[in-house]
Length: 481
Ligand code: HEM
Image (cartoon, rainbow, N blue to C red):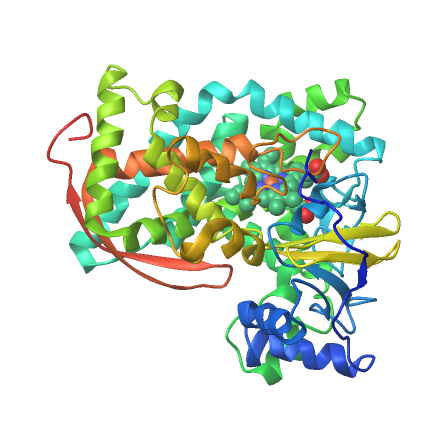
């Protein structure tokens, strides 16, 4: 049960915290969040100030995009899973939080991410995605390998020419083609979209996410431009139309199947576009740089151990990268989970209390009223020292290895559910959960079949980490050499 930690010891207390003055308080907090404190400090300082990991606060963007910025934040490993419990929270129209992008960005439809499981269309769309992923499961490994070995070949030629290779740019192009080929058997770059797919997709993503990001411009420009009003959807209409054309053609089989589930072709296609471009592509844009950065920082010792494990398992499988071989790679798998724990690519989760609730944190039990917005900042929950000890804030490659290590997997929440639980049509856990963990593992496998070690510099980009390769040492032994 997702909420097994929700014990109730002691009488419920009112949730501490403050929203400040209407409008002014929310704007002031938005500035703290983006400019004066930064994301992590924003949450940590409020936990400290009120001595509680269940605490009232405003969340961005606030006026004038969000009707109500007030939330009850759940910021430890114990209270956070209330957000996974469909008996306790409603997840309608809150995928992006306290504001919702215009449905004209999604063909006039509320797509799956904005639907509560109680809505019949949620079941149909999520089932369509489960069926699609299942029908393509044998394509994932070969497609991944061909796309990412070609990315690494480009890294090598850029290193030879310029002494560095920017991973994020290459990843954007490769991940976009990889997903299209893995899901539909058609590389977007080989269609009318040409090489423009990733740029069109990124522009459309910005139109939905701009209230939540800073792009490094002075505050005086960003505030009116990004954080106060929605960017007009018509400016991205042409890009969306071009993407839609690709999905309606390449996704023909998936759309036939969706009609069998009772969805209209059009609604199914807008959902395919969203699940592929926003959920999958948007996810991989952040996942791989984060994973690569953690492995780069792990240094040569970690690389040596990964090389030994990966090449050993692949040799045992007759020189092939198979699902069974990957499953045996305990350290590799632990590295992927540890990266998802430390840097969850989707950091915010929301839910409206369906009824009056009692929420238990490590420190007490708190009373929340029906209709209040609950909010989780995931890094606070998955870096909880009460669960992960004094190394909670560090990358520990072996953390999930062995019987003891695997007991901690229940506290890995990146998929909007525990890592030990599974997505279904009745919950809001990510339907791409197994796919994401698999491609994370394949990414590490591809790296260390090809290289003995590598070096990279790590920085911060628009949606997360940015990584630049500065050197690679080609494999000297084993199946990758
Ligand atoms: C939902 C994360 C990749 C499809 C979610 C949610 C999270 C998440 C946190 C829950 C959002 C919420 O309701 O609060 C991620 C991450 C990914 C990833 C970090 C990659 C690194 C994918 C992929 C697919 C996918 C590959 C492809 C099918 C979806 C869909 C939902 C969802 C359709 C809505 C689920 C529902 O309504 O029940 N994802 N996801 N995601 N994800 Fe993923």
